[in-house]
Length: 79
Image (tube, rainbow, N blue to C red; front, side, top):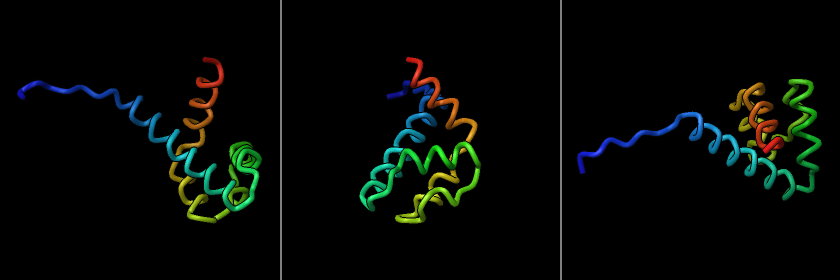
């Protein structure tokens, strides 16, 4: 096995972002929150206070770049 494997870093980053968003949505909905409204509030305002701290959701979303997140969501929506 001397083959070189090439990874597309954008694809890896996008998959990580999607998985993180899924986790956040699942955790917020588990708690009874409207995950979509909380995430939209955060994306529009930039205020992390829109995201509950339940199961580290606020911390998780702050690790993602907001502009990249919006760009990824728009690309996925247009597909």
